[in-house]
Image 1 (tube, one colour):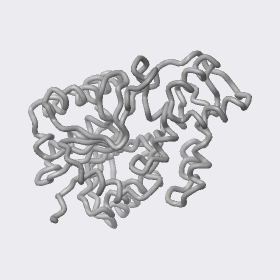
Image 2 (tube, one colour):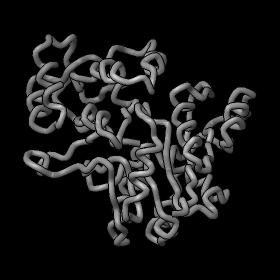
Image 3 (tube, helix red, strand yellow):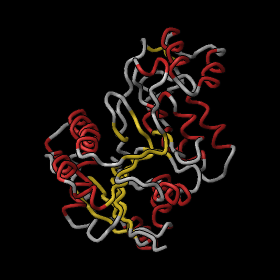
Image 4 (tube, helix red, strand yellow):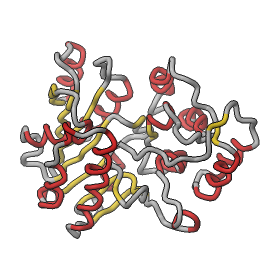
Length: 306
């Protein structure tokens, strides 16, 4: 069977203008799978010799652009430049995750074989149904659907982060359903038990189960860097990485170095709520038996994934 022509549009931003090791790892996995990769370097005025060499060695095409519109602005610019022309499948991805923690090619092979017009790695119902936008794959016809195009044509460069999340990420979820497109995800956010009443961000509340699952080997950078809800079991990432040798812990250490310690836990009420809501409950129980180094206020909804 002929493999589909796949193009990845990758949105990247680093305030120091760097292409960090974990991002190079991710890009390298895409390139090694045989797809075409276009890299949007937001905020970069010049292409450094180092990044140019990295891209050339892997057949990645870099694009310099102003830092505006965040990821949706970057994807919009790449699409406007014709980067997806001729592709049968188009992947939208960004640098907001650590991973893949295991080889990406088998994940792509399994997901590409599914009968779906659009798929993502993680489904979420927080605050409404959508596929998290840090990894999406559209069939060419689905991407060209007027409902999807209306979302991707929005003036993201004029929006702030909250507006981009609402109109971009949530908007795509609404458009996918309104268009009647067949959607799939590697991780399903099943509404069972208390989660029928309390939607949460799976990449925060279920992060360990997701990272361990065969087709979602990623951890949100925001979770380990900022831990906005005081998730008490974030420290389990080190033990998780120790079980495999595909993603060095040093890459995460380098990203977190110099930042405030986020090993704090939420208050006891929120911890009990986490226990009811999360699929990570064994890790939660272990964390609850330890005295928390700090406390944060009662749970507030975690930020929606980029």
